[in-house]
Length: 192
Ligand code: ZN
Image (cartoon, rainbow, N blue to C red; front, side, top):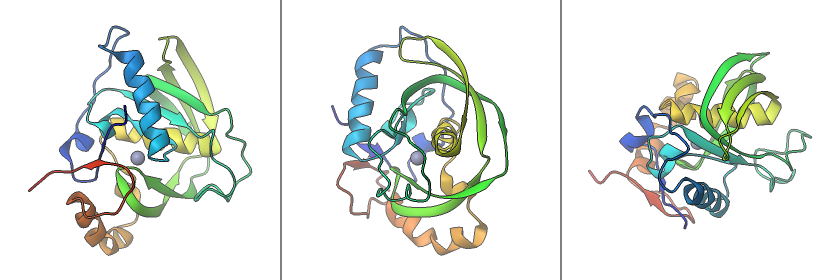
């Protein structure tokens, strides 16, 4: 099943998320549906709030990104094995020189902006089998993880860009929040 994606302006994207346990109803099919949704919408990451669930879970799948993909052409990192589920994640440390990357988000269609983030993160999480991990990531992997993790904290990448840029794109954000955007996947927005 392909979920519609909640876009900028929907309250769920700003809500506090809660931990889940392994008995969360329908978890295996939810995970599989979220992977399908991410693939269909051509994203490299998807967090539960983006499909309307205020729970602490996100997944990444960068296995399909080649060098020609938008936003991924500046680096030579091999991401062909980077497909993971992060349940109840906790970033315990981030460090390294902040670097700039042109980010996009399925909840902010058709808009990319430069965002600075630290190079490295250490993250504790459970995988889809509820096995505990405590791992470090760097580069684009750390980048994607930090972006998705922010969704669980109610933070979106446009919160992190400079105020001048944010003013310049205010009109586009407002249009997106009203569903006025041309995307190939289904979106949900608040009807005011
Ligand atoms: Zn996002």
